[in-house]
Length: 117
Image (tube, rainbow, N blue to C red; front, side, top):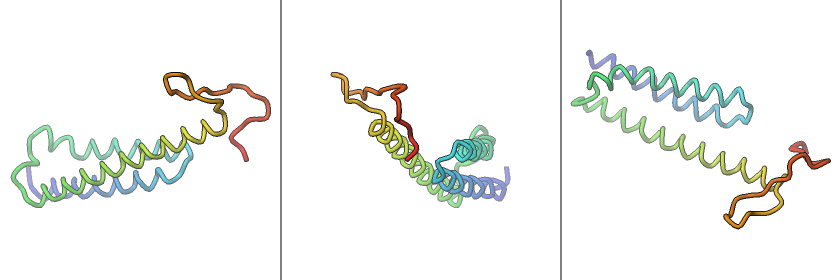
């Protein structure tokens, strides 16, 4: 498999990871779905090379893969922190305390309580 093709796939994967991170700055469900689509495209771009073992023994590809790994780790942290933030918002707005196991207790259907400010 030509190295140029692998390098282009790596560049595409890097660009899609950046786009996925950008999408997650928007809290709408459509943005999350777009992020998921971007991540699926990253997998689709790299999977043929991974399955054939074509990503080995090329320093430029190794460098690109390291950048992809860093981007993916940063995206994972972004997702984790956003999830914690949203859980905190829900707890602040709808929570009534914690169980003995440390899990939040939520009031469902309480009149006058919503996410709108």
